[in-house]
Length: 293
Image (tube, rainbow, N blue to C red; front, side, top):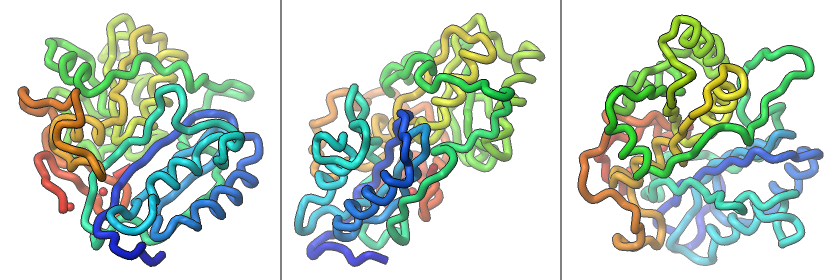
């Protein structure tokens, strides 16, 4: 485990993904790992593939240096001093800032940067030479819009996570896909449409832990199943819980800094959010000093 910087007392959790072409993932892996290794105490996992990049980190805060700023700089375009053939945070893309946790909270053991065949393995079988456009996913809603629309009657709301996740918690009135693995999703969606349990002529709302699965689900719903109106939750459950006041502030953030924070209506989330670091669960209403996908 990498030593932490002098004076660091907390970890800022964050994640992000970007679907964009990377023609030489192995070269990017090596350059990026060398750069990230210089950030003292940084832990997390980065997957790089020809379809893009997917990353989760625990960044030490409160100590010497500017590790969060150094991390963000590493994922800029290589023409701007970064390591990528694109800027991971341009065009309105921003990291999904999770909780700030105590320095002793189990998160990631070390820093891992790996190449894979896909940043999100999906198990789709569309036929030889057939692929989906990951930029054609539907509309992304911020948490406030999402909350407002979920309070309307008779919406189609799909929980795109696996059963072991949705069994622990979900949005009120959400329909779980009851999958055991993400690769089961496509046959389940096919069956839902064929049985008329899902209506492609009506809007459908979809969500997952941090948003990445909804990119592929939204693309499939639109391009394979004929849905015109697909709406997903920006930054997933993690973003909603932050907006609703169920997560901690980000490092250096003041109580008044989030203009869009919910201050009135009760949260529509019930139960625990299954996490994919070593914390495993984040409960509704939990106050961290307390990780999923």
